[in-house]
Image 1 (tube, helix red, strand yellow):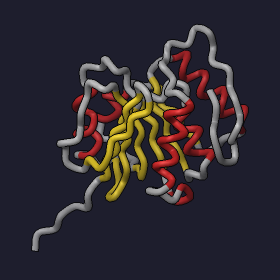
Image 2 (spheres, rainbow, N blue to C red; image 1 turned 45 degrees about the horizontal axis):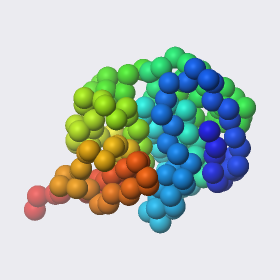
Image 3 (cartoon, rainbow, N blue to C red; image 1 turned 120 degrees about the vertical axis):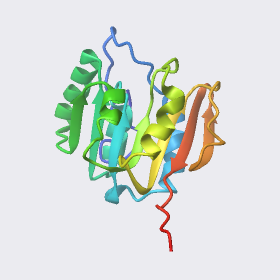
Image 4 (cartoon, rainbow, N blue to C red; image 1 turned 90 degrees about the vertical axis):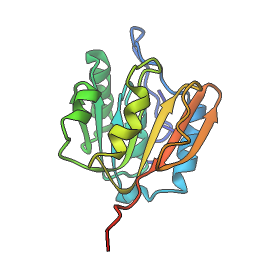
Length: 185
């Protein structure tokens, strides 16, 4: 795993051989963050990394200056790896939640975020429902950005708040921006 840019930039961490995650390629991650650079001011953000896996997106957000990042990961070995990397980086603004993402989303999380990233298993049955779960909750702040990584078999372009899709090889990112709540006159 490589952190591309920022205060932890160019740092590499060797994944354990037994790691079961499908890490996003550096090429796809770098290009996505180039797109996000035009949409956000990192210093003002609180981020959330769902299905954190290696923690790659969490550490990239922190490296670029996010105020805080929460990572949610169920797999015990993956969570241990995230903890190890956070320790090596002396990173105190990462909160790791060891648990099921779907349970976390349905529990009515008490904290809201400016940027939410989700990289679920591509065969997750509930994957098509993730945009609604995130966008129709208080998890994402007004004008917050939700990025969903998925395979090419999913198409979210017709959903409300969808703004763009980026494709890098076999990696697809759908990007949503939560609209301001409408007020009746």
